[in-house]
Amino acid sequence: MSKWVSVCKSGELGKGEMLDFDYEDKKILVANLDGKVYASDRMCTHADADLSTGILTEEGVTCPLHLSTFNLKNGVPENLPAEVPLKIYNVKIEQNEIYIEVN
Image (cartoon, rainbow, N blue to C red; front, side, top):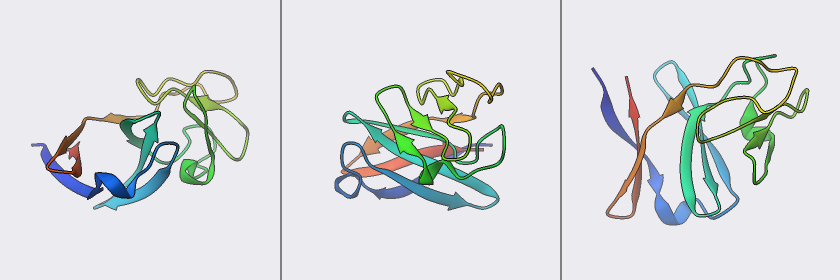
């Protein structure tokens, strides 16, 4: 069963910013990519590096360890060495609050 969980106020996550969010056993990355908020698993699927310490680009988030870039819209890695997509979470903004849907 899924539920919507509050992450932060929308004003706390500016354009080009990322934050790490933990919920139960999930490590989640929340990013504002050019005014649109995305959420995905936070750990790189290649080497378990924390993507919140990576680089946010127009294409997505780049892993700080081996430089694979993940598309934040669909989780798919854009280049090697990562090959496995990230899990993507639904995001909604209501009353200036960012929520993600978790299972």
